[in-house]
Length: 536
Image 1 (cartoon, rainbow, N blue to C red):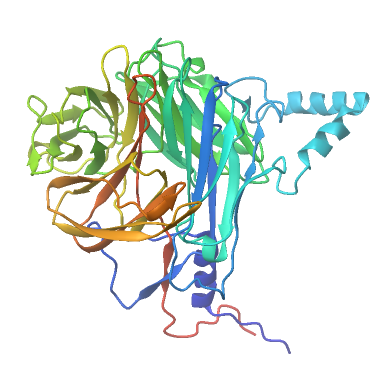
Image 2 (cartoon, rainbow, N blue to C red; image 1 turned 90 degrees about the horizontal axis):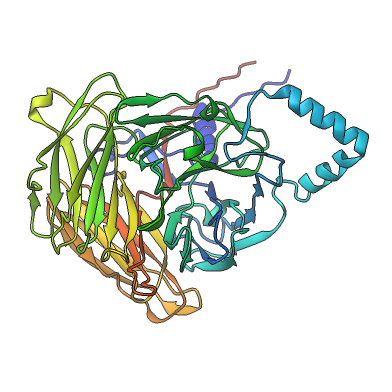
């Protein structure tokens, strides 16, 4: 008689390691030292990059891929990290910006019949099978080993979105930065974004459908089956009904930009967008563009929480707007603090913010940093009687009127153990590190350059309640771009952001990316005993 047994702990360990699912760290960013679990490097990671530009042939894009060196993933665990071009909406036959509605079966059947009659169906099928994973087969970027960045360039408005995965020694902490510079015209600016993992739930406060704005949500589906996505819009008076924002179909291996102004005829200066996938999963990124103040990307804001940190407001910010939303049934009352290099202060006239349930609230903080880099800290006010979850983001403007540029800063999770920002040049990067509670020791390690150079590290202490703004150490004999890894060594929690500056024609072009934990490890149960889940 055959007997089939398995160890439950081993099964859970394998599942977590392959999927890269990470457990939550403690609120102060410290590691769990209990004996019930241990951390192991992830064995597979997925990242997706949006279409760099939908409008400008002047767009010049650089992709930079990097995996930090991680103990426990040496020669015994070789790996790969590759990014391939995704299919665009036009490749898969979508006819509008909002995507094809899920459940439009009659139309799909008619298209199939037409293809059968004309003989075009086989051509479409063959085109869709150019590569087994559904992409168009073009390898854009491949990393060979940890510790050294690899780059690739693209130009024009027809540059595709990218779908990629990493495994083995290249999976733990794999990060990809997409940086686009548009010198003039529509979409002008420096646009940067961290390529993101697929998920089912995203929040984007700070969007707009005002006449001066052209804002998009980019949806990318990495899987072999279609995803069906809903976009919920919330303005200052609450939910905005939009039939075309529901049931958006994102076909397999497709990237789909959704222009927000096509979803409603009501102009909204400050908008919160909630992206949810009812079936499948997608990566979602927000791209905001203003006629006078440039454009940039924003990654999804941190999940709704009672306290939030928004790091990295530049010292020369001319205007800062805070946008917040309370998704629950209760109003939120928040204390607003600015963590400066010397301590936390209350912005004059903006001590608190009241956020009505289901309505987007916005407040203009002006030139709140006044010559010193800072970070915004939101906490429940004593009058609120408790913690109410909110989401939040900032829109930051730099430069003189007529030559201004903007960027977005979403609320971000803490750097639990380690985080990485790729695509740094010798003089264009500034890191903001904020410790909202206790003081914290942090190490910044600059990698070898893409074309040469030696790694270098430096340790900093961030005092509690302050923001430390630093230029990262530059690798010795640097050639090309390099990556910077942020590691929390001891103390309280630390939150991080990186600003890139590349002035162009008198405009202070810049982009800001928050730097959350890279989820390079997962916590798995320790095997105390063998639990057979299948008996005789």
